[in-house]
Image (cartoon, rainbow over all chains, first blue to last red; front, side):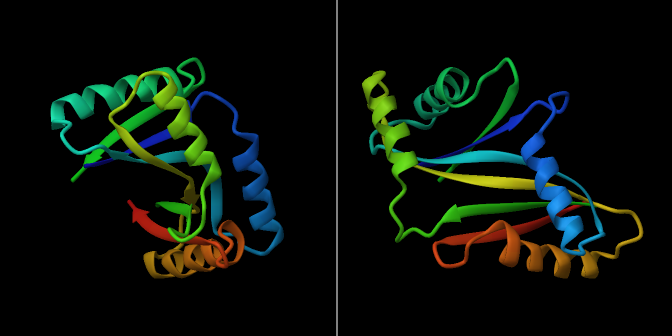
Length: 81
Length: 81
């Protein structure tokens, strides 16, 4: 089983990295871009023998406690088969 | 219109950051995790008045030339409404 966890800055938090990418794109002539926000994702392979419910619970815990900083970041968990 | 571009290392390229996350998770007692690979994504807002076809073409160009390094990375473009 596989899971993907998306971690991004909360929309109320400034994203200087995304802003830099956006102004670089404008500088390169891509005027059709209004804004850019950057995030990261983790593709997690889950060991055999773990049930879907266990996996869901474990990945939620990991996302909340390890992968994201809940003060400034939000996360989203997707379980894939 | 919005687009999301996923950039990750090619599967043949070693991902030390993902491996570090994986061993940290094992150290924290999450034995159900087999492997972790990390990537980044860009949420791009496209200016009004750009058609879907123009947007698709522009985002593909940006992904290939700016956001990803095609030598070691692969990318995937998703257009959202």
